[in-house]
Amino acid sequence: FYIDIGAQDPIIDSVSLAFHERGWEGVSVEPSPQFAALFREHRPHEVVEQVAIGDGNKLQTLYEFKDTGLSTGDPEIARQHEERGLVANEVHVPSMSLDALLEKCGQRDIHWLKIDVEGLEEAVLRSWNEASARPWILLIEATRPGTPITSYEGWEPLVLSKDYAFAFFDGLNRFYIHQSHS
Picture 1 (cartoon, helix red, strand yellow):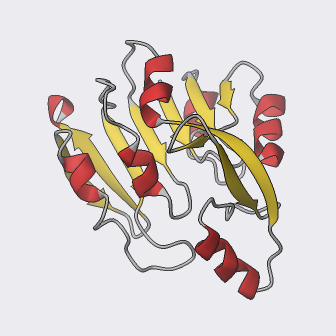
Picture 2 (cartoon, one colour):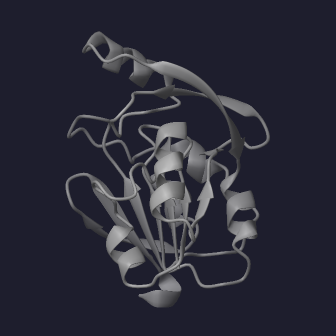
């Protein structure tokens, strides 16, 4: 069982596709109306949460860059993309905390959880306070969007405080293993 936060496309560059094709179950979290619709079309039996994860129970602005994985809730990152010639469509999406999402998954084992939210990884992790769930593996995008510059320094203590150990950095993502599955 997996949770893919910032799932984007169900096929192209999909982290979860190989697992899905082998019978895994999962939750794909994708606030972009375009990509959430593609998940519903291509994975009709998968749970799709069309929300932003972070400060729950409010509407959040999503700067959607159609046909890309660059959509973000960060206005500064959106501005940088617009300076490069991309056009943002502002969409207001509901949000939920990571606590609420984990609670919806119940008491089952979560084998991996991916967070790729184009610069708002820390906001996602800060919304994980009360839920006792501890996915076996965390995979978190750790560079500033569109650059090789690392960005994990602010949020990594939140992960380590939940008894995770750093395992690997692939140049884009940092992988952590929970101590109960080392």
